[in-house]
Length: 350
View 1 (spheres, rainbow, N blue to C red):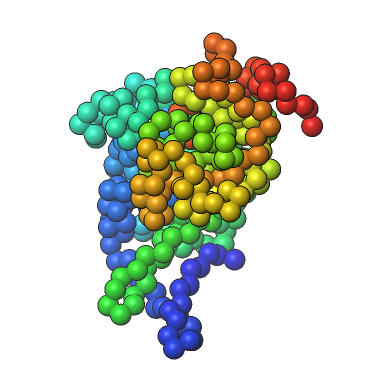
View 2: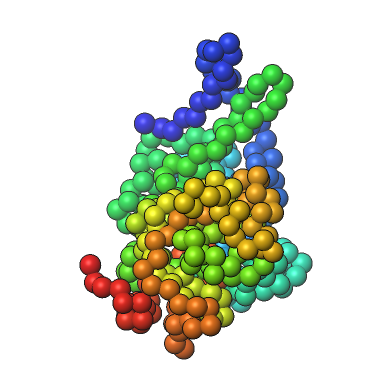
């Protein structure tokens, strides 16, 4: 059954369906995404618009913080089947681009070196292997049953990193509203595609403590938590951690300092309680965890952790070549790092 989106307005205790309206000029949607790629629910840097291929032009080309390219194609006036075939054709072309060719496309569009734009956007160094992976996103208001079935087949059976994001326009009291929904769960798509092209996930999570002016590893140890904030691109990563998730805590440029299991899923810092006391009343007063405590977008989001083994920040566990990542939360796949951490933190096989 083809995807449809419906909204209701609550009036006098009853639901009134909000009328849909056609987005007359889909260029507006392309403009919106170009200006703010977070509309897709993805953390991206747009590096090209109307990028010329040997055939047609890619509507938008982006890169994520892992250095993977992301092809974003609007359905526009194309038939449903044509758009699926077209985005696959684009992917085959992008897959053949060298890092230098990607840099040239980005530098021409951004009017600055890609490395500088990447650092400005993600606050990290541009990976050396940019373009080694790619993702496909089709943007549409609707697709037919057959095309949705093809996308689901490519993702679920062949682990192709392809998805469809639907934008539907509504009219309410003179206001124009826009709703967004994915055809497939983005995390499921990512997990399937990663399992095809990356090493098997160890089952352990890497979590960057962010030890500094906003939070302290000493507090994390004492009160049993990990947190991140300052924007949804950071705090949303904490929301990936479910109860019983196995986490290794890492302090940047030092090493691993703790192992434990998540005991409580992410909540705003103001709502996290330790033995009947608000966490924000317990942490060191000079820290800035209280800043933006009432703002869901900027607040720290906290997960509870039952620590099994911890070390002081001055005694981290590390070896040259061990896995580390600038992300707040990610999966540990490196076998050497897992073996090392199991030994140092006395983590038994399950």
